[in-house]
Length: 308
Image (cartoon, rainbow, N blue to C red):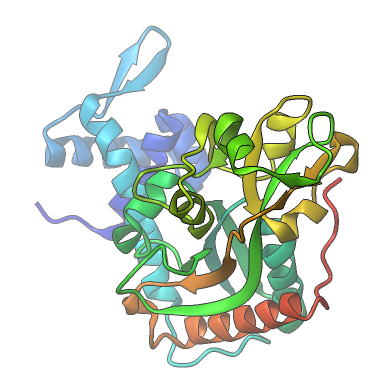
């Protein structure tokens, strides 16, 4: 059966809208046209895809599996047709997708967005949240985005660019800690909130603690740093965060940075990308503007704003 690219677009709309009528409206086509497309898709897959339940339609198990693959395929199609022999930021119409943690958005993300807005008014940025699942399969997942920002050392065998340095600090609630020197015994005894805590994703700060015989008693894990103040306020919990984001915390939460007898280590934030982007002119420009954003942060010239 011969299929054309328009059927992929129709399939995506049908799976997302779960309605022939709404899919037709979304694509600006007539309902009979979408009905014909659905009939062809049903013959191709040997499956109903959409089944009526009462007054609504539901996806079949096969259609559920197709959802993610269809969206990814369309993203790749867009990338193919966006590719050009050169890249002029002043005139380009383009979208870059970057994966960042929540604490990188108000610092690196904001600085990068300002630079892109000034140099390339037709370029859009899409920021996706970094998750454990994405990092675990970074080699495959980086095929579907332009880059991810992660600490140096977490990935291997991928091209990368160091952006800026930070350092790890231990934070606690001011209600239960004065900020004075915290003993090794106290670090071992108190409960912890650890962002992105996973056996295979080990930040240097956690490795330093373990090197000194301290295995944090993890009470809460989270895929984000900016929630830490809310999770430790008024409790005896401790957490490890990049120092730069402590300036983003709401001062009313009463956070303190503890003075430890050990150094938790330097954090080097790094841009990683898939080798398939290596020679793409648009991506080369993105890396150049990202490097500039990193330099601005490193020299404290970045125009960041406190969250409201």
